Image (cartoon, rainbow, N blue to C red; front, side):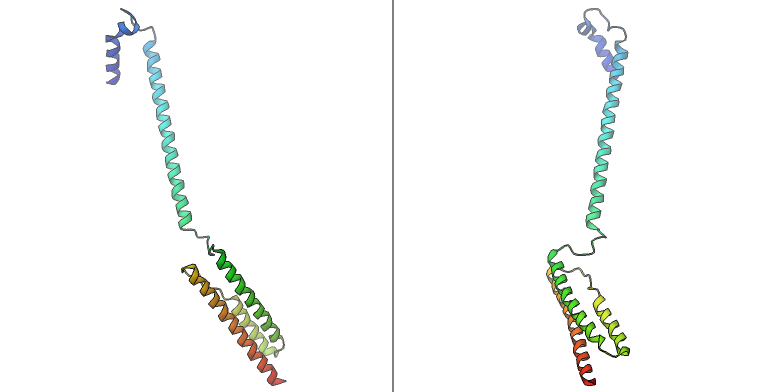
Length: 167
């Protein structure tokens, strides 16, 4: 319909456009139609590329959001202060474990095996991973390691008193 209106307008104003009493040059309409079709194809190609880019960007944004919100690989808390507190208490625990293991060496062989197992259980117990603020988690770390250290120190005292009673 639009093509017909355009063609009618061209016929009405052919004298003004092409000169008095002249028709468009031979092949003019075919070339004009080819240019219109080519322009329409280029325009639709740009729209398709634009839509594809928009969809790709939206999909990437959604995927990135899921990765940051539901990160299954983040097991440790990123706070450096928490790591420092944990490392400090871990060093204290290792010292107490070494002291306890040295005292156990002096014990009777039948008791030695049980004590080694108990020390290993205490040493390898994992701190619970709970969702609490960092300040409270630091308190939890300190309490957790302090309890372990106290248990080892109590074991050391029992071993010392037991050993001194035999000698």
